[in-house]
Amino acid sequence: MTLPVPTMQAPPVAVVGLGQLGGSLAAALVAAGRTVTGWDTDPAARDAAAARGVSIGRELSGVVVLATPIPALASALEGLAVADDATITDLGSVKAPVLAELGARFGGRFVGGHPMCGTERSGHAATDPELFRGARWAVCLEPGTELPRWLRVAEVALAVGAVVVPVTAAEHDAAVAAISHVPHLLAAALAAAAADAGPLALGLAAGSFASGTRVIGSDPAFVTAMVEGNAAPTAAALAAVRAQLDRPWPALVEAGHAVLTRPVERRTLRVPLDRAALLALGRAGGTVDRRLAAFVEASLPA
Image 1 (cartoon, rainbow, N blue to C red):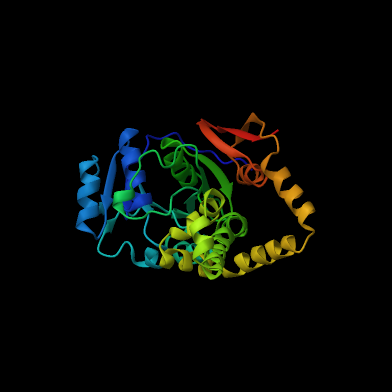
Image 2: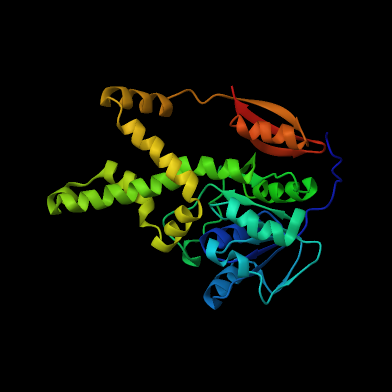
């Protein structure tokens, strides 16, 4: 059933945590003309955000974005005044544990999110207002999610140049285990194995080694929290990689090459504001690109 979604003025956005992701989001939203309040326990992060036009304050309303590390999400709002009608979302790289914690606390007001972007850098000095442009942003649509709130979160993502992938928390965690969490573990293993190979190997390391190990330059505490927070899907995805490595090498190389060189043609369509239709779009590799009244404009692999 398609639910009626009222038209409303874009609400203000409050960002809690002004490191790379949160600081970049706040700066991008200011550039897009949205009203943005920010907060961080670090005075330097607050000062840096204020210099980019973000209002600093403890009173949060509209769409409240939690951009803290996953272990800090549960306590991120302590000492802050959150409006009773605020929509709560997050930027965490694991969704099921966050849904269990914040969904129980906020009910249908909570909408999980995860922008698929970022670098191995961290902190407010890594802020980049263009960080989200062209990125895919997973926005969770659970059975209890209030669709108007889902749209408010989706519109925040669209406002900073991202495209939206409708997904459930469980589907998100299985997918990112394969394309994000296992790659972090593989990068760590590759770097450690190269170190064991000795100084000559590290001295000869060039582009392919740098590309294969880049992400493990991230904060180890962040990577550990991410993979341990998504342990079962990550273990399953890692087992699938091990199975691939057992294939004859020519077949493995050919299969991997085919994936990365496949045609990337897409077609545009309109999708109704309906939970089942939106999730079907995400499962098919589609993205929401624009809001159109009672529909969204989307794109799908051709």
